[in-house]
Length: 356
Image 1 (tube, rainbow, N blue to C red):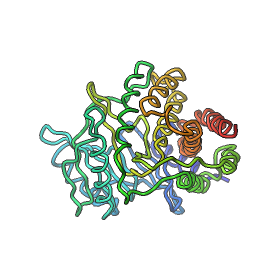
Image 2 (cartoon, helix red, strand yellow):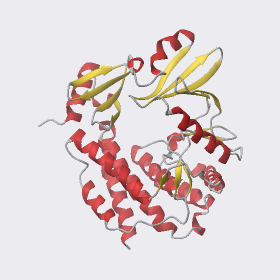
Image 3 (cartoon, rainbow, N blue to C red):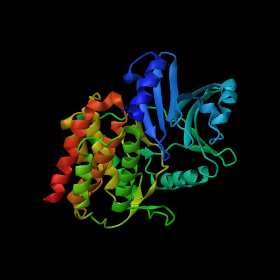
Image 4 (cartoon, rainbow, N blue to C red):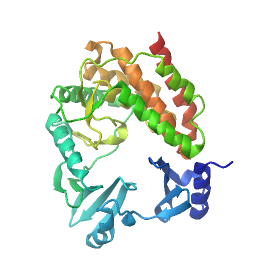
């Protein structure tokens, strides 16, 4: 019996006249609907698969996001590009107007105030001048829209020559963690981390008819391990990976603080290190096992990891949960199905270390 993901991929590639490799991203929402993004010669196209079948959708018709409905009008005032769109949740636009370049983020009604507050917390903590956050130019609560100055630069280099950059990144994150986090930020401990992957696992199961091979066994092993308690809860980005950075000559810009929380000081490092291995599996230029080890050690040294209690166990726990989450995410992305065996091996290694 064909599963919803296979049905959606067949429908999308049939309409786009290509192959499954055109589908860059697949997300599944809480209702079990699949949202697919495909890159075609004519540009990016979006599709939704639900119980009624697969249909093409347009960002400007997303009634849950006030900013989305403004796309036609914005296009008449300057060049506008959709950088990211999660239907019913968030849209990110780049707007070129009058010689300036802006980034607009649109949310559901009343959601933008929370995001703006978290951005302000991050900006106050990351004030060393080298690691910075985008400048928030305007918050229009009525439109649920945040306007940022565009951060120019390149992707974060991942080769061994980036060792010093990763050390400075670790030191900057360590400095930010010395700022007392506001009590109203959500706490994100081991149980919350496990809940995230379990909820995603249920969605992937509904969307594909099954989770990745051996995923359930690995999750069961993780359940048997006593989760390490963090010595304190500090500011945590909660979605730290190389794609969240813009590298310029004299600074590094960190993006997207929607998930900012109070968590273990090693949560972000574990997530970033797991993504370095993912990039090596994907064959990203400069990424590889040597670079992963070199940059990883530098990051942890800057973060003062060697002087933290129970550092190895805490790091391995959050690396294990990250690899389990990445297995689910990339189960939904046919273009990168080849990385699943490598992610599985890394999750097993982390769990083996935790059992010792």
